Length: 226
View 1 (cartoon, helix red, strand yellow):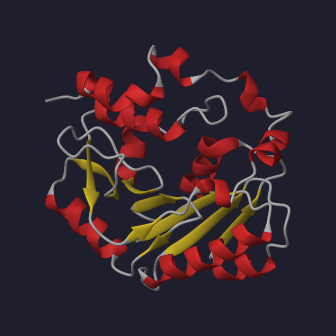
View 2 (cartoon, one colour; view 1 turned 120 degrees about the horizontal axis):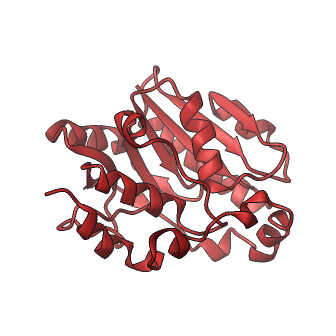
View 3 (cartoon, rainbow, N blue to C red; view 1 turned 30 degrees about the vertical axis):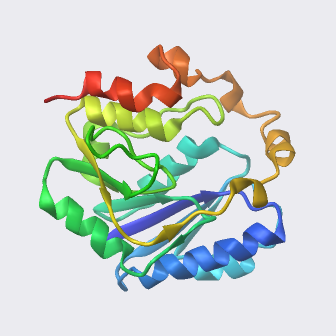
């Protein structure tokens, strides 16, 4: 069974329409036993139509950040595999099949992402964080997402911990497309949402790890158990 978890904040009609297409694409790759979980992190538009398109909808009273929303979704999930997904992208109908095939090829693989420019296959430590699947055994092994300062690489932090615990990261090849984020997001609106967020008291990525997030896949090689 697969759970697709999408933490989202929809602040305009354009992103609303893109999200509808995203949910349609994702559903095309799922079986009747699988589920879509939306964790709403502060949307300001009418969500009625999107609620009907998912299996579980959670409305947070205030924004709790990427990691916090992922944790909520993962704890609700009843599946063996969970997918963490941006809601402003498109995927082909074979996405789930291709990802599960990769997991079945090697029991050491704990994370599979879509194949893209942010993945370095030869290292087994980096990935494309816009759409990735996780074996829930990894959560049992290393725990859930740590809460970091807003936009400070919660997903990169999680993967470093997974690599340090001996899990491999791989990719699956299927169609995906991700539009320019600037076309669907207004930075000023997001900053407004974060004004009173408790996340502002959390550590930044470099404070926790001692290096910047941009270098995490290289540093991950030092943590990897060969």
